[in-house]
Length: 265
Figure 1 (cartoon, one colour):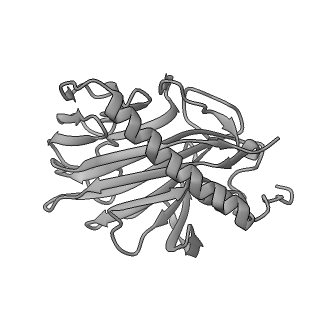
Figure 2 (cartoon, rainbow, N blue to C red):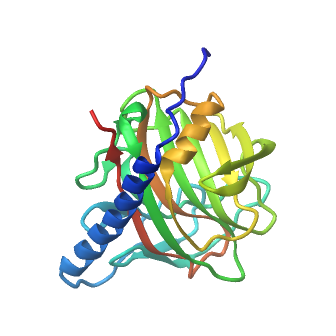
């Protein structure tokens, strides 16, 4: 792979604009939630059942690694796992990835999304999360960020970025540790590997993070710098949820937001 040209570091003026973007994101989320009519929570028990929240994000049950019953209940601002039967070996893959996302995932696209979008046309991709953790389960709380050379809206992407906000139990990311990195003002343990269908780069927090507002593009650019993506690739989805191996009922995404700020032309 040829030499990669990284985007220049943002100026202080840009950082101010980025802060405004974060504020605008929170304001939009607040207004959208306030304007939406009250409705009953929706429970999904189908393995790949989905529903829409906040009028712009998709909640998915995504029970892909187990035949045991799993149910998630979508709330106005996120979701909670209400049933999590079965277990998986901690030396293998998790049971599922119940999550909420902006973008496109296996032919399902969130309403009004601007994704997929080419990386070199993005100034920032502010996102925020508030997690609810539980005892007595083995799981990670993680973001899943997907990149591909094409603007695909179905199937498996070429590169998967995982951000582990919390890790409980004897589990580890795909691949092997390759050092540490400072991304988004935090230090992460970095793992790199593949699962047979795509590359995986994981950033693991040394201690639990229950909530954070950050720029997804910080992790995307760190991935480009490691040669696992290029600036003419596409960001196809931004997802947040849990990978449970054992139990998991009560885990929750209390709130989630994700937007994309285009670069100036």
